[in-house]
Image 1 (cartoon, protein in one colour):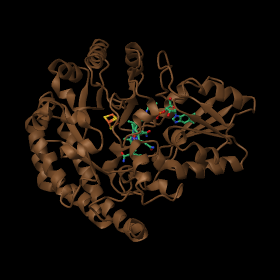
Image 2: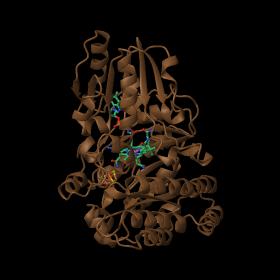
Image 3: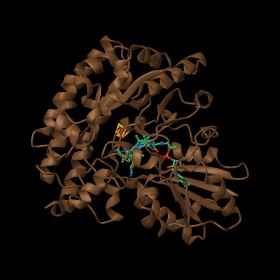
Image 4: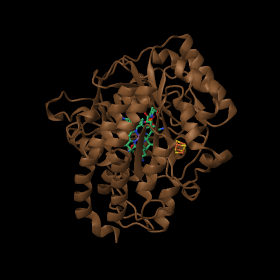
Length: 458
Ligand code: B12
Ligand code: SF4
């Protein structure tokens, strides 16, 4: 039995457009979900994982599979439907799962043979068995799975074309920011895989560099922090010899022992959501966690960097409180905090989030012709109306922010500081240059977008 597992491309995601900028090679990440599914698949299936981000194959020249499984973020939905249509025309059953299929069930069910909602661990073997018997059901509700003792992801199946391997150690996040789908999808319980499973799986990864995909590797409570320390100790003990980056909340900075253990275990960079430079902005999106203890962000960032860990920060533009000047303000604040890199995204109502419900109620969603418009839900295009900013205004803020933060002078200053402190200067320069070269790509893309969709924002 032959199984194709496919990660659809989205040409509008400039960050992964290698042709536009060769620096982006370092930012093509493995589709871990398909590797996890492959790990749950019995040996009678011959599995091929196709990541269209590495290049779209000519499916018509490929051997006909017995089953096709497609994953999709919302932004990939349209391409997913094209792939599904191709294989269904050949009479091959298509099953789709992942975040978009879960949040937009009716839309997806109308376009594939079967949908698996939620986490797949409990149902995937059943789907395969039903497919083998030619009796696949239209819907399997995976919900929240038990992540104890799941087999390791198949790290051997993808070509060695990626800079980073990938692994997951926990699911969910103890917070619930209004724009984020994680808690809606993975539930409010923050769950951890057994440490021995994680350590064993780390040892199967070929790449030296690894993305730990957890939404919040360290959590927020003292028992979460204790688990993170235990994990790092086990990784040190097993001498896994990997260098990894991950996502965490700013409280990563608050525990010296945690930082020491993290760096010993191979942590080289952390991605932190700062989201807004103002308390009003943080309140608006439900991230008051960042306001706790009257935090000094610069000092927090420095404490992390002191351990040779790079800090990448993320902010959002387009909140109700954002006014003209917000782009320059974010760039200024990010520099003040001393961030090594900055990722700014447009406020986007992703289906299933509180923000989605709120914007629907307020008629705030400008790009609402679905499924066609999903391709713009990359967070790199404005899709919603902003209270104080026009479409051209919000684009101007985004470009100002990127140009200010990624000015040659800004990059040079950060690189000198990183060289001086011997804090990952190579990774830092590659990251900064890739962001800088994407400004040109983004400019072209925004101009086209404004021309095509400007009238929908009025
Ligand atoms: C790592 C990551 C990335 C990586 C990409 C990884 C990749 N290639 O898959 C990078 C950094 C590139 C990335 C980019 C983006 N991301 Co992202 N990302 C994640 C993150 C943190 C982890 C994903 C992961 O590997 N999870 C581990 C796997 C095992 O879990 P899973 O994907 O949920 O898979 C399980 C089930 O969903 C199911 N399943 C999944 N697929 C399938 C398929 C079949 C057939 C079946 C049966 C089951 C099934 O089974 C799996 C096992 O239970 C998630 C958050 C999260 N917790 O998932 C956000 C998340 C998926 N990303 C999100 C977003 C918005 C984006 C971007 C649009 C934003 C941006 N500009 O950065 C881009 C879009 C890129 C694109 N191609 O369009 C949103 C998606 C929301 C949505 N509705 O689309 C999430 C949920 C985070 C959030 N804030 O809400 N992301
Ligand atoms: S802290 Fe990050 S992962 Fe957690 S809910 Fe907020 S945005 Fe989502």
